Length: 307
Image (cartoon, rainbow, N blue to C red):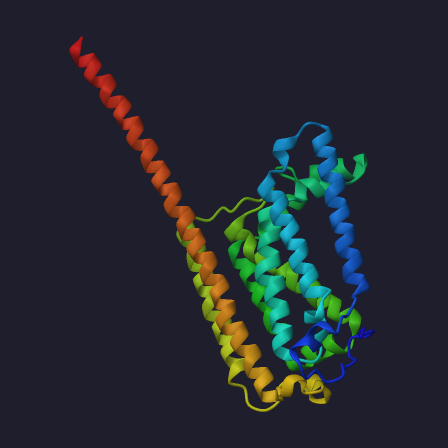
């Protein structure tokens, strides 16, 4: 069955295999992702033709490919279809977009590739805007500062979980697309100070990044707990939806809150652990180099003393 409009409800699913029987072919999302993929291929081909192999590493390509796959799973699969009937599935969709796809996009560091996919004139203009001192780069630096990105990220998260806006997004296709777009944008600028991506590298010290992620877990917990322990029905849109697999409205809301709370916090904590390991590795490398440099100085001084 293909769901044609956001706001339509599916027929009731009763078995596990029904999950794979409901496909919502989101043409808009599919076309946009196809355009992004083609642009990446064009940009990569131009860079490779000019012998600039180092501009795009193998890990960059892998991260970009994984980000496209995750976005396809979240936007063009039964996850998107059942997200219109079940709150907890919608939360799974948001986690895929915000906590997996967004970091992968930044790790791919593909802005240069996309710029090279453009014709010569706009490529030079955008390159100039993003160069050191360019207005676009200055704006991006301000936008991806920890304070600004944090505020925008949680404003967007809270805004779209306010019942009136949440129900509206599920009722109108254009608003639903806008919701996903704003959540992806907010997630990108949230993760940017932690990961860094050309042309704006992460500027904060590693302990500050860890504190940033720890505070994010506290606020995420507050939002998840408020949903998991909410009484009654928060989102009227789901009241008319069939009770797939016998899941009640209350169970659906509680499960969605738990998914935001537990798996959501796990993603932040995993990122925090990775930041700590990178920091520890860099400190070890720095100390090792410093010790070697000291050994060389000691040998040099011993040689001088023998003369």
